[in-house]
Amino acid sequence: MRITGLILILLLGGLLIYGALDFPIWGDPQSPASNHLSPYYIEHTMTDTSVPNVVTSVLADYRGYDTMFETVVIFTAGIVSFFLLRIFKKAVPESRLYRHIPTGVTLRIEKGGKVPDESNHFERIDSVWIPYDLVIRTTCRMIIPFIQIFALYVIAHGHHSPGGGFQGGVIFGASVVLFAIGFNLRQAIKQLGEKFVTFMCALGVSIYAGTGIFCVLMKSKYLDYSALAALFGTDPVTARSHGILIVEIGVGIAVMAAMIMLYYNLASAGKHDEGL
Image (cartoon, rainbow, N blue to C red; front, side, top):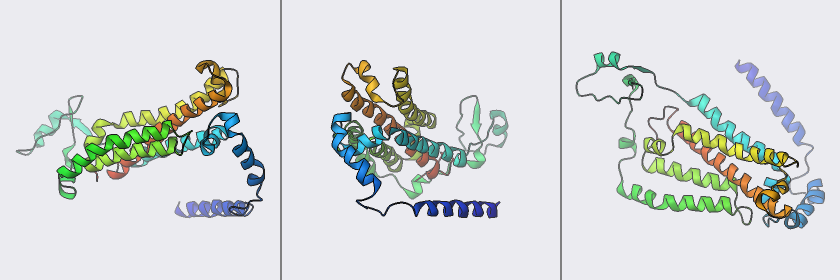
C-alpha cells in the first residue's frame, strides 16, 4: 500500500511539474494574463461591479466559480478532519459502571441515562500545562469582542477596502481559538458546539451556492449577481456589489467554522476532552 501511494505521488508530482513548465515566468509583464485580463479588470471593475477593490471583484465576481469551489475545499478540509481525527467515547449503561466505581469518584451522567467510559477519563491537562491565570483570562475576555467586531468589519467592508470573507473568517475563527487557549477547550465547545460549527460550515457553502441558484431562478446565469436587482430594487451594477457581499458573508462563515473545527480536532486529538 505504501509503495502504491509513493508511485501515485511521484506520477502526480511529475505531471504537476511538467505542466508548470508551460507557465509564464513569475511577474512577466508580457504574459497573457498581464496583456489581456489585468487591464480589463483594472479599467472596468467600477463600471461592471461598482466595487473599488479589484481583488474582491475578481475573486467573488469575475471568477466566482473558482472562489466557490475554494470554499468547498475549505468545507471538505473541515469534514475530512472530522472523519480522520474524531474519536467518540463508548457510552455504557449506568448500571454496569456503578459496579466498578471506586470510592470518591464522581461520574458525569450524560443524556439518555448513560455515563462515559471512565477508563479513558478526562485528564485535566489545563491545570498542569496552563494554570489558571487571571490576567490571561481577563485580557482574553476584554479583547475577544473587539477581535470579532473587527472580523465582521473585514467581511462587510471587503468589497470596498482590503479584506473579505477569507480574511474575516480567519480572524473570527482565531478569536474562538484564543478563547479556547485562554480558558479551556471544553468551555469553547460549550459556547460553540461541534454540531453548530459543522452546520455553520455547511451553511456558508450553501449561501454561496444558493446565491447562484437564485440567480438562475431569476432567469439569469449562475452567479450573475445582476439578476438580484429586482430583489434589492437597484440597478444591475449595484446589485452585483450586493451579490458580492452576500457570497463574502458565506465565505466568512465557512472559513470561520472550518478553522474552529480543525482546531477542536487537532488540539484534542479528536477526543474533544482536553487541549492546549
